[in-house]
Image 1: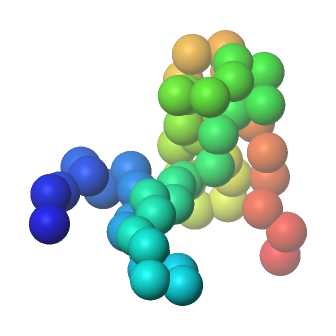
Image 2: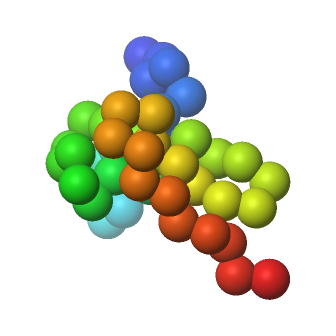
Length: 55
């Protein structure tokens, strides 16, 4: 199978293979812009959006 550069994982469901995103998307920037994963938060490098992780 082809590699997906770590942004997606290939999942087999009901005999078909689908690509599922591993990381969260930025709600402001839209599809294609992933949030960076930090120890205590997720952040967007493009617009600065930040989500704090629940403890």
